[in-house]
Image (cartoon, rainbow, N blue to C red; front, side):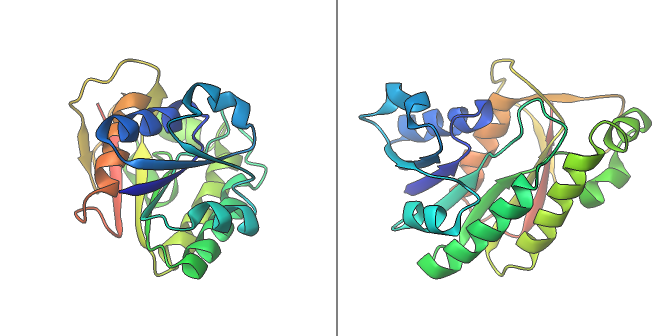
Length: 208
């Protein structure tokens, strides 16, 4: 399979790239800083560009089967319109290039998933993460109405722990306290979802 990975220099995106390479997929990455993936020069196709640019995304999307977006704002709690601008670029480029499959990383607590959050989670979502979650929710409304074969992935608090290979994932999951999930396990699910039709046009809430 031919995969385009957005956010490949981030911790979750890099896990996705590594999984795809180990499985023998052809991987293309769209990155602003190609030097950040210099160790993969001979293994991936690197396109220098911006995930919020229709032109750049369309260029990277030529010939792809699936787009996996692991875009994030690192430790920032301000969105800077990243997710809405990226969603607009990805959707328009996908329609232009004839690519229908999209796996998109979000966060638990965005949109309807907020209703299933624990009291502790809700406090954090409506205070510290309010700005970034609002931008994510707007971007996902656009994705849902795009006509693409999307999967929206909603992990709980992300950690740098090694993959366990065992996690809970469903359209909805009850929450207690502040559950976590490793980025490696989230990447594992996203990679598998990209190769399956089981999660098309579904929300995937994932946690340990």
